[in-house]
Length: 130
Image 1 (cartoon, one colour):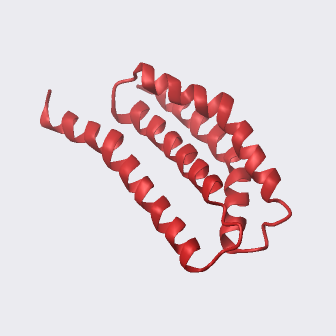
Image 2 (spheres, rainbow, N blue to C red):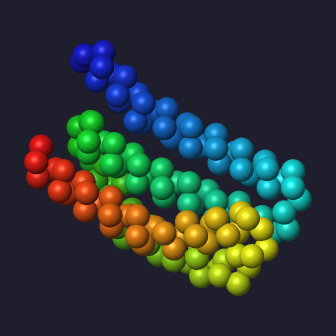
């Protein structure tokens, strides 16, 4: 294995998830420090995990070797994530104005239905030219 392949693999599969998890912890702690009532911690985790999975699948397609795990990621993003993001948006629609965090989570849930199809379309178009 070449050193560049090793660096790409470590970046995609270890560094990016670690950075995403650290950002999740950062926002969770900010909500705790700001004494947010009914802080949307679980919803925040699902949003981070979903968009992180979308990023990892995209980077895997572009820079790495496709695998069974990548296929499972696509399975989640196509079949499970839309339901979860829809539920998150629906549950936060009435309380989205409570805090900026509630609004961000509501918007992230809605935007998934635009962002994910665009990412999959671009990956499909780019993949045809590889």
